[in-house]
Length: 291
Image (cartoon, rainbow, N blue to C red):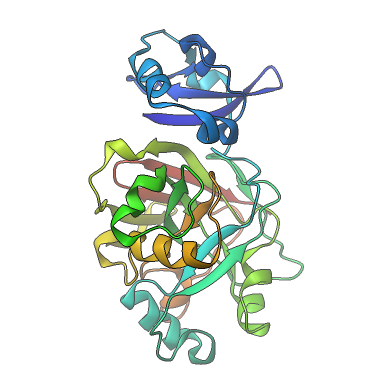
């Protein structure tokens, strides 16, 4: 199933994308009363999933509603992995060795502050008054489906609700200047996400998916999640040993090579640029850089 959040008549709603991918079926039409994606993730039962999946209602035309990020206001910061593809580690070290180089025997974790995630089709605020080197990063996001604590490695996938796409927009001057990544990754509007969540049952475990990005139609990133240095079970097992991953937690698994800072000379984003982040089996997240 592809589940999305949208607004109609000023009211936030949750729905399932119809098979034609041109309509959205509100969950209420399948007899479910969930008003937000967070509420649905925390409470939906297997029987309710089956009922929703079997619903054949015509639904609402997708182009008539206002799309929102799947979880517009996450309850906690997004957990992110840095330097989790080897080729990206190499391009990062070429750009700024102090910030991105060196041995990495353990995962790099950081959090991304999200006041409100930007929807598919939304505008990415450029923050030109404080940043001139705006960059893109196409990433697979894991959506935790139930509270996870001390999860064994071989049970990690049982805790996954589904997957979505995130553009980990990055302010490279701020990121390298402060020698940590929270400010440079967490500016307002720096978390485009969507267009929907695809439930885990649509994929094999592990989900070997193509990850790509395009800037103004030009292919920039082109890799696969098979190349993750630290894979999904490793990350869930390690994090859950020391913290409870609540239902609805978002974990961004890192980005492959091909980001703007990796080119010689670097190719950063400018106002008006269109950025597409694409992941096989999920879809395309398209956003435009604001003025």
